[in-house]
Length: 229
Image (cartoon, rainbow, N blue to C red):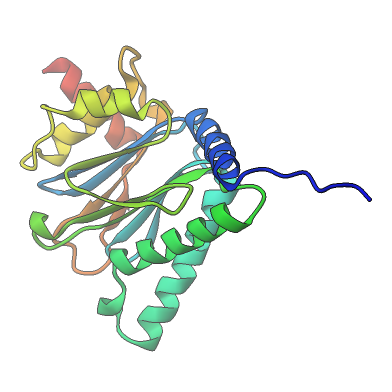
């Protein structure tokens, strides 16, 4: 009779965490920040069809980094949950905090009980009528949930981007100023072109659907305005 191979639980959790972290770090980064016009989300993403940033519900956005097929499945599940809850109860009952908690529970369950953890980090953001009502929740591969204020950075070299954002972010930033600031923070010494970026905004004051993608021509104008000023 063969003896089963034994791995200490602490080592197993450590190995899973390292596996997920390496997979996420290989991807490109994503930055979300609040501004006077709402919540801006910018990701380094050269693909025009495989979106990292998407709409979940009226005032709620989803963003993910890591393995696309894994976080896109989470996006679809979130859309279905929000639609079902809004239909069964009220559209006002759908909120980012409840959705983020569900994501955290699912990711924590997979990390603890499955052989392979999901190689993803996700963001759930909801724009408020006032900037004090904005919500941003970052959910890690192990189900850890963090409430972010001001800005949030996912994936890639996130520590470097956080350092660039500290001291330059302000809640009074206009959308026109926030877009080039986000591009500079993501690029660092690199000069990212509009084709390298995906950007969307949850517009403050929108009556119902607040999510709007920023098209390439508008993005190019905002980045060009910063260079010429």
